[in-house]
Length: 146
Image (cartoon, rainbow, N blue to C red; front, top):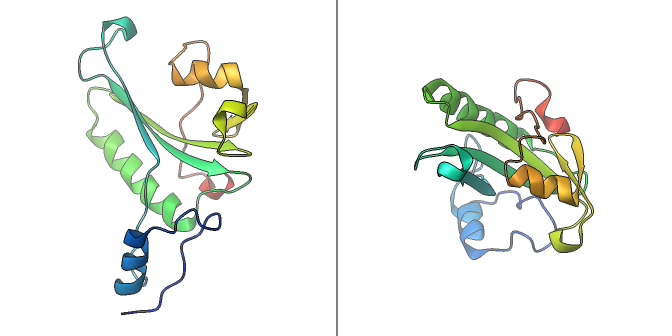
């Protein structure tokens, strides 16, 4: 068993025996274990899409938290590979969503890739409302500020 740093995040947020197992038995040097919070797939004729659809990746943050170095680099690699292999334009990109709390029912402000949205605008963004366009995260440009 090795001694590795604890998971970052809110106290108790990552207290999961599976994470503890990894932390205890897998050396941190040269390895990064990450979770991606959400994948959104939009499909069907009501969106003008086929049954495969399009998809977006989401990383959720609370408060002023940004991407860690490991997240930034790893998500950047995933983004690059998906864009290179996406000849049908099905992949929209990565979005970092920041809120003051995790209670989205009572949240009034959502920040998506540095763009502040009110609750209705955020819901419209999730519903693919064409009037609410936010550029996907470009991980080549100072990603830790997201």
